[in-house]
Length: 409
Ligand code: SAJ
Image (tube, rainbow, N blue to C red):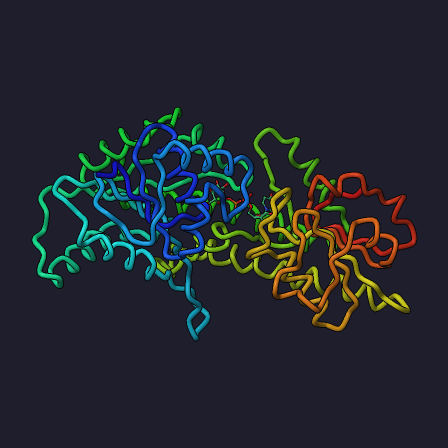
């Protein structure tokens, strides 16, 4: 029998399944996509993350990691499927737990007495309790007996895209159980590879802790983004302002940018807002401030383009943050698409990809940094990639420069 069955082989499930396998656990990785399963069984990866290819190859070659499209019996099940939100007609965002529910129900024929079921997906408070309820309902519907002593825990992941493999091992973790025994067993499991501390709590606190961490960062980025709007109005250099304010021993302002992207920070605070709409006023406003920032940048660029007789706009960077190739949920893509949609000729530079994403295909042209700088008269820096580090204001003299990351000097 498998030691572990990991459901969802994305950014969290794949590294987690692989690292357990390289530590000697027999792991079945499950994904609904046959293409993903085939890729992983071939020792390759379908997502980009430094060194993940080496880890997955080692895991598959050891014989300990195997992928399939359906689960099988295991001592431990880990749910690592997406938890997006749906936008309601009134504009509110409600968590979409359909992937967690489907994955949980798919376990019914395979669970055995004493199994540990871990929810790793970032989830609204109360989801681990729902996992238990869904599994028990599915067992009842199928006329199956409820196995004794099934344990449930929530063990959220905190790894940062771009340095996931390092953080997987070295970040402290939280193990929140529906019972203390569940938390303790989850802790013992993660000690297989986690060299940092693992703190025990209940499942609801663990769920809220994960949401709180990302909401904290969102609020702090919103503070920086709001400052950038205020400074634009007051004609103050926001970067110098933040540098100076941060010399105070208890002030640590984050960096403004073109908006907040990625799959976590722009999503998770909504789970808190949906659960406590009357109380979560600051969190909702922070989301709105950060979601507004791309529109502000688009307006700035359009105003600069209007001052050119024949504007050509260069958008430098499409990824959602520096030095990654992930274009999903990226404010840089949103801004570039809006500029092209406004009828401006747009050159896009993204050294980490070979093709434009579907939302930009046919609307912008993917070129090198040198080509963009030579051809454009409006330069918009959207991502502070290392590859753009050599750009100077002197080299861009005569062009309009909109630097959303404060990188060009
Ligand atoms: N950003 C700014 N200014 C800043 C910092 C970030 O504009 O000063 C922007 C980035 O450009 C990006 C977005 O915020 O668009 C998010 O980037 P990030 O590096 O802050 O975070 P993620 O989304 O890559 O990863 C976050 C991390 N959470 C926290 O730092 C609290 C990570 O530890 C989590 O594991 C991850 O979310 C997750 O999966 O939840």
